[in-house]
Image 1 (tube, each protein chain N blue to C red):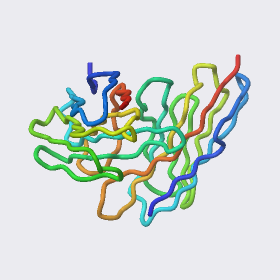
Image 2 (image 1 turned 30 degrees about the vertical axis):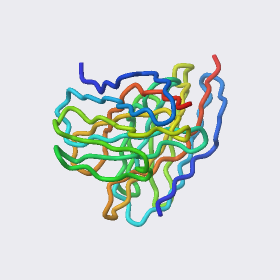
Image 3 (image 1 turned 180 degrees about the vertical axis):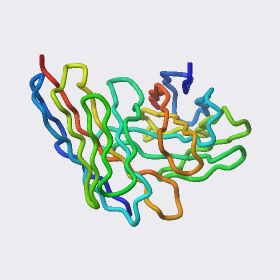
Image 4 (image 1 turned 120 degrees about the horizontal axis):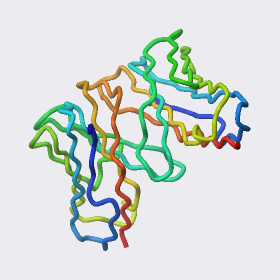
Length: 111
Length: 114
């Protein structure tokens, strides 16, 4: 059974204070690891897909990295508008196409 | 504007009264799915569809039905809702078949079953 654990559950940062969110996973063959951002009362918004260990992707102040056991979402010099819940999900290479989501990290960036 | 729409956005109903939540996407996507989101449990997939007339169970399909008669629509049907189906529901679509990359989510439907 695929599993995803995100840490920390909640994170408070000052504007400009860089940090990282962690997503640890176990899966029998990784088809893809996904990062989403979810604002209160809205649906998740796709950020990145990573397919293999060593891969990195960037978008504005966000950078996602992947190893064989975990993924990090690095936030550089965050702004208050980066406040949201960040979700990680994996899809294994088994027969089903069902993704497994973590519980998310709630990020608050104070001005 | 490319989007996934869901209706209704909010729904209060009573146990046993059949209901349908509609989902429509205007991006010509092959893959569509339904999720429920509960506090402390994260998103869990209910059903998914890789193409018209092709549907399959997700992690939590019990008590739900779906159909995919047209590419753009993927309604979620609760034949006899129960209080444990009170949740926040999301529909999503993706351009790829099978690999759920770049999923676009709808705005959500908040359901309360009394």
